Length: 338
Image 1 (spheres, rainbow, N blue to C red):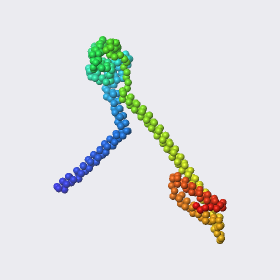
Image 2 (cartoon, rainbow, N blue to C red):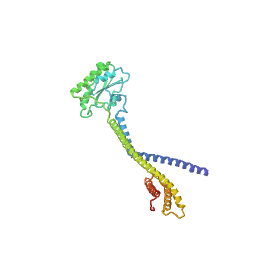
Image 3 (cartoon, rainbow, N blue to C red):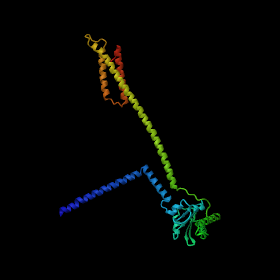
Image 4 (cartoon, rainbow, N blue to C red):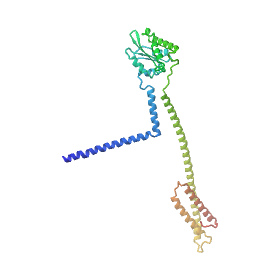
């Protein structure tokens, strides 16, 4: 019992605690990474674009129903199944600030008016449905200030806009013509403001378009400037690489020439070194010094960093100095010890 209890109270809880602690640590680390990303210019730009996109979707009618979605860009809507020429009805209304919504019988006209409140803002909306030999109508004048100083004009417009349409209950296009005439009378009376209805994209869409253009221009500019800088750096590296290659080539050529000079002097050294009376001109001594310096030079060549331009140039100068000494020995000129 005791051993069993100790196992139950010891090993198992420790495993659960370890796993839970690991998950909490991983979640905290993920949160820190997300917060750190949002604190950067890139994260702030992404967040701003997401806010603009959400605003654009909301103001552009992403949450609208089928009626509101239609009247946002059109002046006439009819429920599916109703026998009416929708294109002809739109031509009758034209560019007036007027929206006509034809619903099926028993539809909630008041709720329809609420649905199109944002989509048809700034217009006079008449919602109607067939009710036997008449029309059941519900008007909502969404003209500017209709809830405050123009409340009386809005009420008058809602009462007048649907007059005389019951005669054409079986001819909806004729009813639309009567509604258009009533609207024109309201305009002449000054009840509703004159002017054409304009349908334009919402402000967030303009902002998104501007942000997209600015992003493309900024990216293109950054790529252009980055490409120019990369090109300059590549050209500079190429020049340095070519200069270093030329320096190494010059050092190799000078070293090979010095070795050949020493080889050409070797027979003369052997002849003078074999004399019993010695060498009065000091050629042997100078030749030995030259070969000793050449051997030391070869040791430096074996350890020098060929990418160090200064070291390569210094060795080249040293090889040229030894080459001049070898030439003076070949010409029989008196020399000085170096």
